[in-house]
Length: 85
Image (cartoon, rainbow, N blue to C red; front, top):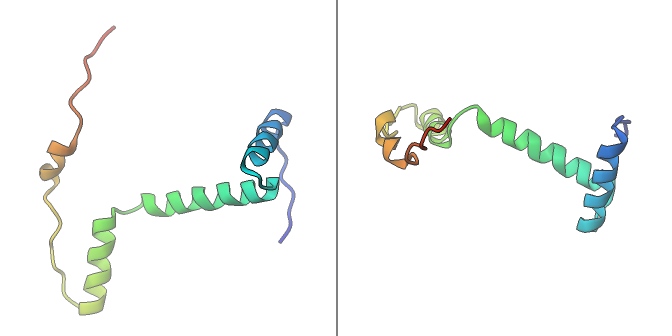
């Protein structure tokens, strides 16, 4: 399907430069960008662990709660940054 998209001149220049560097057409770069954005959006809704649990429960009809408690992820957080004014 073909359609038109209006973009500011500066964005078109950046697009053309990126396409040239990648050895792709502008259309290919735009298509890839849209695909990547939509894939990221789809993955933002639920954590992978939850989606696996959901799929498993649909297959078996049982819910196996193997998810780690929320607080168990605390150790994965980076240390707090120093607050400066």
